[in-house]
Image (cartoon, rainbow, N blue to C red):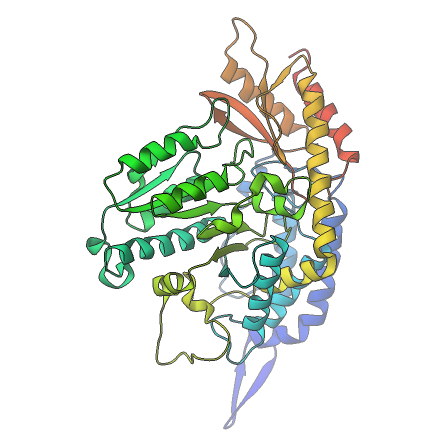
Length: 480
C-alpha cells in the first residue's frame, strides 16, 4: 500500500487510491476474461447444472485484496457458475443477448457513470429522449404521440403504465390519487385474460389489489382475450374507473390480443388501454409479423422490454404513454436541491428511481449500429428458427405442439402415454434436456398440465442451431 500526501503535513494510506494506478492492467485483464467467456457462447453449456460452485462462500476481508486480486479471486471461484444466457441456445423465459454495439455501450456506461435524473450537467438525458424517439419510430408509432421513460425492465414499465392509468382513473372522479392517496380513489376495475405476473404484482404495489382483476375468458385453445366476454364484463361493471390490460405476446405461447377490437371497446366504455408488449412489440419491426400487433398505436400506455429482442444488457425496459400529464403526476418529485426546467423531460419524474443508470447508451449504440433493417432481419431470423424447430417437434413421435407458433415461441409437451405420470415424466425429460448443455428451456403450466416453452430472441441464434436443438430434444426422450 502506498503512502499518499493529504496536505497539512498529513500522510494517509489508502488501498482505494492505490487502485487508480491499476486501472490499465485491470481493463487488460477484463478484456481477456471477457473474450474468453464470449468465445464459449456457441460451444459452452447453456446452463451449468452443477451446484458445487454454490458452496464457495466468501467472507469480506478486513484488509482488502485490491482490484486485481478481487477480480482474480472472483473468476477463479465463480466463473463456472454463470449461465450462457447471452448465447444462441438459451431459450428459457424470453431472453435476449447482448449485441456487440450494446456491449460497447454498456462498458461506456460504467466508465462515464452518468446520473440521468434531469438534463442539467450531462448529455445523458438528451440521449435518452433521442432513444425514446428511435423506439417510437422503430415501432411505427405516430410521430410525437408517445413519450416515456426507460426503466429497469417490463415489470417496472408495467408499474409505470398502470400508475398513469390509476391517476387517470382518479381524474374521472375529480381526485389526484398520487396526491390524495389510494383511500381517495374510486373503485378501480382491471380487466385482463392472460396477464403477466408483473401486472398482478403492480396491482398490489399500487394499492388497486391483486384480487381486483376481472378475469376475462381466453378464446378456445388460445391465450388471446375473448373480446365478446370483455364487452360483457365492461358493460356489467359497476365501476366507472376501468383499466383493460391487453397482451401482445403472451408468455406461454406468444399469442396476441385483438388490440383494435379491444381499443374500440375501451373507447365505448371509457376505459384505459394498457398493452403489455414486452417482446411482442418488436413484431412491428417486420412486415411479416406486424399484423399481429395492429392497433398498438391506440393504446394509452405500452410496455416493451429492451433486454429482450433489442438485445441490450440487463436491465432495460421501456414505458410509453400518450398521456404525459398523468404519467408525470404519478411520479413527480420536485426538490429544491434538484435543478429543473429546460427543454427536456426530467426523467426522475417519469419513474420510480430518481438516481438513474445511463440505460439509453447501449440502446443508442445498437439502434444506430444495426438500424431498422438489422432488427427486421433479427426478428425474422429468430422466428424462422422457431418455426423449423416447431415443425420437427410436430412430426416427432415423442412430443406434441400445443398451439400455432404466432411469433417466436413454441409451446409443446411430452406425448401422453397410458399408465405414466405425465407431469413427473415431463419434469424428468426437461431435466435431461437441460443437462445436455446444448440448450436451456423453462417449464410452464397450460390447461393444468406441465409443458415446455422454447423462446428465441437472441442475435446469435441462426439456422445452424436448429440441428443441435433437434438432436438434444430427440436424445433426451428417445427410449426413456
